[in-house]
Image: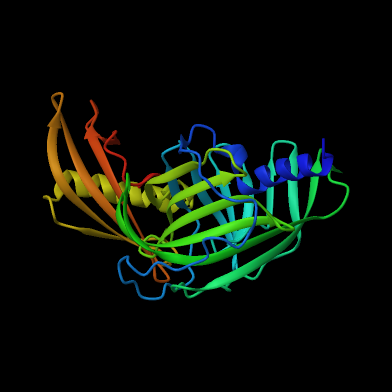
Length: 321
């Protein structure tokens, strides 16, 4: 057995997120070569899209996928975004969603980038753009280095086309960004992102490791998790939501602003119905901060005390509002 190759595959699986893809849909086996450099063409038959700018994020942004995994922004420092997933992985990344992580921690294991990739090399996204990312890692377990030398990961990525696709979160015009992780002349992993400029994130991702069957994840919902707001803002927002649902007819909005003024929202009821004898209302919360917009769609029903409480509805955005 080639020990180095065995370790390499394990590390690639961790760094690529394969360890948290359990429960994903299995795709048919893909026929692809061990040789890198194939399929690097641009398909111009899809919808016409303007060049897409590098996405922006805000603390509390939350993305929910059909494998049950949620990813939430817990901090931002310049172009570095800190994420936490519902299965306990904490990581940092650049704003570019196609670059490898800068750091990650999962249980007793962690990794830290020694050399980081370029953050803007594919941007603005446009057909035919191509880049190569090189990143060196130090891998640890229980604080001890588990890999005998810095692990070099190389990704080749290019914009291969545009597609209109439908996922549980909706229908989106997307850029198809194709990436290959290589080790010398060999391709260890392929990853295809369908990036929606209107969301600022991928809405579909497909992964293949070696010659094994692939996996995919689709976006179910996205929005702002208002539980990340300061307690004072959470209380005032809840008060506005209660008042809007009590008093406003469908379609009549109410404005809200955070105590510091940096975040504003527009709360509007969209539908009123009775479910199992209980009065319920659907409503939207549109949050804006520094040009960054997220829309939460919610349902609330009256409880026995006359208060509006969150209720299940078809998934459109995660978090609370």
